[in-house]
Length: 258
Ligand SMILES: Nc1ncnc2c1ncn2[C@@H]1O[C@H](COP(=O)(O)OP(=O)(O)OP(=O)(O)O)[C@@H](O)[C@H]1O
Ligand SMILES: [Mg+2]
Image 1 (cartoon, rainbow, N blue to C red):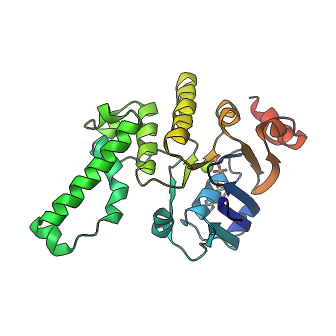
Image 2: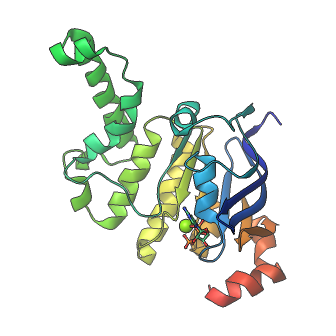
């Protein structure tokens, strides 16, 4: 399928007898916004870990941008255009916002050890380019005013944005967000929805895959949803279809009363 950015077939992930993911099949179109929902322990984060190659699936196949990536490692996925954030914010404490956002660009550094040690001109040019690119991304996301702030000293909602900025600096084709609204208050959730919609318009063609518990966020943002429970897909469809699905209501929505 040429217009899929990511597709997977029959993905399973076993942890010593625990089937965290059991026969997961999905297609994410280029530019699409797709959600994965489901109760705690449903296997959502494990799916992200397989897609980003932190885990290698115990069964099934994965393709990115039309290419089989079963043999590809985490860095290889980043180079191909997959980027993610984590359920618990992982910013580097003691680094500024700008330095945090520069980190993913380092793997593109192509200067030699000698140039690095002797501060030769090419190294300086590379560093300048990296800083400029990081700054441009902060400006685009209206975060430039925090460039010199200590990243982990910022309010939680802003830290989430900085983490998303860091994931965007490499201009990914697919951005995966693991519970981006976790720990945010209702007003911050609304701001996050706007922020994510802004990203879609400013990073043309980018696809989003979002894990979320907050139905207000997911229903407002996603075009298509997969509902996971105990490792299996119990429903998939548009948000409107999912809201009416009896199995989903029983397994998830009713229980959480949202
Ligand atoms: N590295 C691991 N080793 C063993 N078991 C694991 C590992 N990672 C996840 N699991 C198990 O797999 C299941 C799914 O976990 P996962 O973190 O993917 O769920 P989740 O849907 O993201 O849950 P939550 O909403 O709480 O974040 C759980 O039973 C978990 O304990
Ligand atoms: Mg999780």
